[in-house]
Length: 197
Image (tube, rainbow, N blue to C red):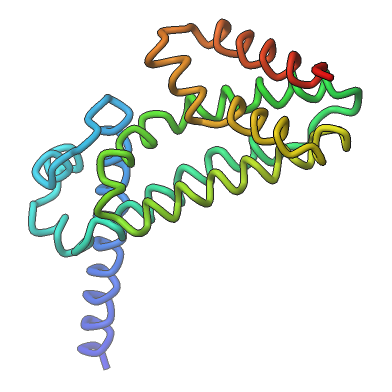
């Protein structure tokens, strides 16, 4: 009986070590991407996680499984921000709150979206994850829009574009705007569209 208990304890210990190594690998990948390494190699991840290279490959035999876990971690970080109810009030109040909220979310996900763009062409998961983000952003925007804007196709499409991650990334990275300047730009453009005849 004692032998069976010892075997079970060893098995449990291996399972716990495996779970801990997996967690360390995911956290290492997150740290590397946050530091600006948009395409960490298995060797980079191994060194950052302080695990053997074989351990990385044993836990993540394909990159999509690693991307999936990273996406779950990011989603758990941004869901409380993105999912919080907007304040009551007229459209400009709600718009301002939505731009504030999206700026926080977009800043958190920017390094990962940049990294994902590098690998999207080889990853069905990353392509679907990107499409899902666009659908969620659009659905949340439609829910917040006043009916007059929600029903008008051209303005809805323009507002959806202006409020997208892609627009935010361009304002921040390509145009070099600060967070405050980017928020002001988005608010200005969307308000102008909302007031257009």
